[in-house]
Length: 95
Image 1: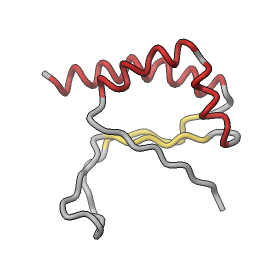
Image 2 (image 1 turned 90 degrees about the vertical axis):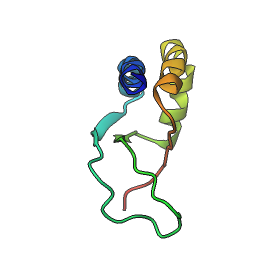
Image 3 (image 1 turned 30 degrees about the horizontal axis):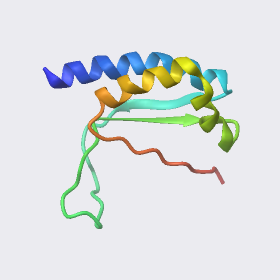
Image 4 (image 1 turned 180 degrees about the vertical axis):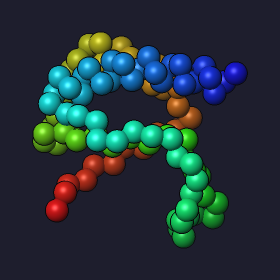
């Protein structure tokens, strides 16, 4: 079905993405499936739960952008887009 095909496409992207992340000095902090929304956002009329989430650590803000220079990573972006209905990327800094 569509979900299985999407997971397979995203998995192919993920293999290249993890290589690119490691090449720029990044690492996976956490990845997992979302079981339920415990506290929904008050700013949305209907919560839009996520199926999965991942958190990465990069050595500096430019590292994630430099992945775009990696030809294998760039080529895999079509698999990412085929595998996802939506995606959001947030940047943060630890305190």
